[in-house]
Structures are given as structure tokens and as C-alpha cells.
Length: 304
Image (tube, rainbow, N blue to C red; front, side, top):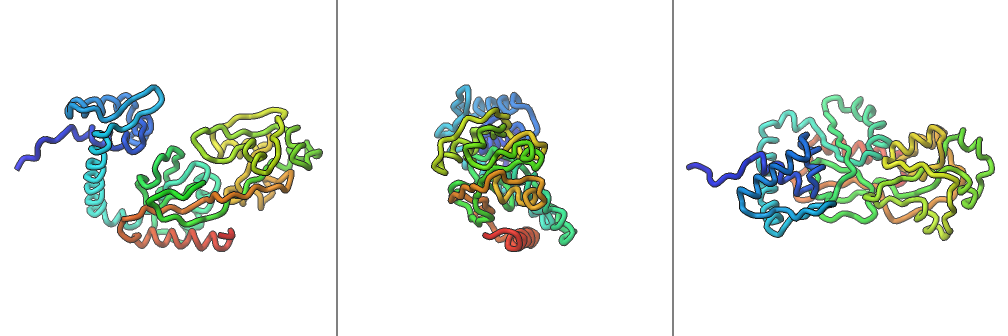
């Protein structure tokens, strides 16, 4: 029996990605097409259904009630197809572990550890995806996720990795040029490396001072950077003082590449976490081996 009516199948893929990210731009990046191509596919699907799937403004898109209902059906159907395909590719899937994390955790913490895991598990292929644009952790298509969480996300198994401890750091050369830095008030006499990313809930300089009970001074100058890994590279290059998350920068601190001009530390209830989707089949052996290795590494290096 012929399956009908069937919408344009490429449009379904584009719609699912756009609805999951609530962004045509991120959907285009994921599918390796232009934003205009995503927009055309969505229009084609809306014309086919004679129904608006999104409401659009200059800054954001939102699913309509009909769009949200259709998305749930499309998502479930595409997931079934994906799972069936994964079964056909069992050999490759059995040896691959997909980890999604932020760009900061990937570059500063996870990637330096990968070589150790690979030496111990040569038959397992790691697939690491770095993205900072996550609106719903439960929709991540991965085996495991590693993210900073100010509050535990819903519908996920959450395993704390390390607590949030935040303090200023700089290069030894920068500190040698500013030996007068001993107190929080004196930090204002230096250049601050300012993390400029409003979509994150990471703590910035002003909030850091406020939570410690101090009025934040005005820095002598600022360098605004919208990528945390780049910001740390700037600190390593001696260009200013950055706020450090101890778990992410433990290697740089242990080697002395970064030093602390003051010993003041802000500790919060937020944590860096291992996130695992709920409601899925038990982990494949390769995923469980990576998870056990990761937790064993943390048990040796970090108080969890």
C-alpha cells in the first residue's frame, strides 16, 4: 500500500533540527546548509500543511501549538528511523562513543585527557561534539554530555563531576609586572579579561565580587572575549587577569602556567556534571567503559 500523504522528507529533517534548536541558524550549522535553505524547507513544509509551524520575530523563533504537536510526532518518528539505522550499523555503533560538551570543557579539560583513554581503549572511537547553544539538554543526541549546570536539568541523570570554585588567575609574567596585587580592591588596577557571552549563566566579574560581599571596582581596562577558551589563551599570553573555574584549569594551575594573584575563592552550589539521557536502553559496553574511565580519573584527581 502506498504511504500517503507524505510531506517533503528533506523538509521534515530541516523542521526537526530547527524545532529542536529553536534556531534556523543552528539547524543550518548542524545540517551543513545555509540558513536560507532551512528557511525555504520550513516554508515548503508549512505550505504543504497549510499551517504555520513557527512564529518568527527579528530575534527568535517559537513553535506554534500546531508546530509543537507536529514536532513531537516528527521527532519520535525520526528517532525510530535513527535507532533502526543504528541497528543496521551495529558494528560501527558498538565501538563509537558520542560525547557532547561545551567548547570550554572540550578544549580545556576533556581533549587533554583523550589520549590517555585511547591508549587504554584502542578499539573504541570517540566522537566529541562541542556546542554552547543548548536550550534543552534532554534533546541532545549523544551517549553522554558534559556541561556546567547552575541547576540540574530535568529528564536527565545527573552525576556531579566537580564543584564550581571561581577565582582570579593570570600568567606568572603578568603577576611579575603587577606585584602590587594582593587584595581584591587592587585587582581594579589591572586589565580584566571579560567573558562576553550573555547566553551563559556563568558568573562574571561583577557578580563574583557581589557574591563575595564586595563592590566591584572599575578595572583599569577590559578585554572583551566571547569564547572562554580564547579568554584563557589571552591570560596565558599575559594580557590580563581572568576568572578561573578550578576544575577546568587544574592542569594550568598545577604546571604553573597560571597563578593566583589573590587567594580569594567563590564557591557556589553549581557544578560541572555528567549528563545521561533518561528512558533509553542501557549503555553499550563502549559507553560504559568510557563512563567508568572518566569517573575513575576524577576520583584520582578531583574531590567529587
